[in-house]
Image (tube, rainbow over all chains, first blue to last red; front, side, top):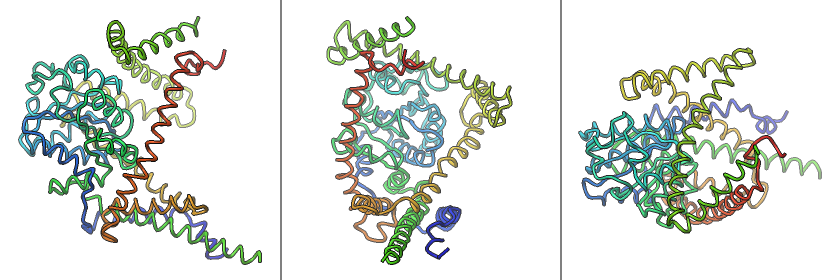
Length: 278
Length: 208
């Protein structure tokens, strides 16, 4: 077997080792590559900056444990931004695992800024039904969420005073890893109730939501860990996303090298075959 | 009758929901609200049904000791443990549920998802070939976006993030719009087929 043939049929374990090293080495020895802020991230940041203190933000945790490494950092960063601006956060959940993940992000952010559960933030918990749950919030939030995730009646929570539907919310932000998620919030909260909607989602699903950004149906969009790292840069804080950017950069470069190398091997093989046939 | 009744229910519910969208006044507006509440109740029951089904299938696998029955034991023990801990002690920080969720479920799920990176790298080396003009275009766009979306791209060429952003904002948005319109038309067509009883596969049991 020639060297080219060997390269064509390279044992995939070598590729796995290369990827593992590309991720592990930058995590152990950070390079500190500079992060540039994209317009879609800046827009969400500005939308939150523009809100007057005391405004209520509806935050939906629509992701699970598998996508948590990508979506949780942006959830944490946006929660911290909201509390730093003295905004009040009402959390809802359309994915069952999102209850604990969202609550954890809110608690960490709340501890940092001295916010109190029930007064400055609340987690209303998970409700099955996806888009219908969002429609129900639009009609009467108390109908679908009569109590928070701890079982406290909504009437006993100071933050929920006067909140009947979307009217009291100045902004809706969803952290989504699929359906139900960004699309449903845009379709109901934005299109029907004309609320400003911002979103954070996995990098792989972000391209699907660019049309909403273009039409203004999304005020901003954070795509994947890069989006979260950009948001952390705007907050001037080193969070989990910034720490992962070096590893992601090197992993992307390694994958591109593999693609280019694979094509180079193919071209050489093709040329050799053509020469033989002549 | 077993097939006619669900077909009649689907037709009535579907027709009322369509009419209520265009005429949100009574009686359609009220009916629409009521149907939404019914949907939530049915969805909640579907969740219980799903758990019941899971227990039934894996219970059978354990009792018959079929291939991989050990995994079924792990699944049912995990399901029971998390349910008992969650219902008994709550899910907040410093509870056993929270500990298991953050120290077992999250690392396990994240690991499974992270494996994708290894398979993507392997597949891209073997399958991402520039055999045509379209494939070359796709490869060029992929390289620009992959590099432009990470800090390394900025380091290589400061304008690369802007180029990647242009690809995402214009060609990508145009393509996504076309896909969205196509999906919407497909959904309308499928919905009409279901409401009118032409499409019956959702009833299960094959064609009768």
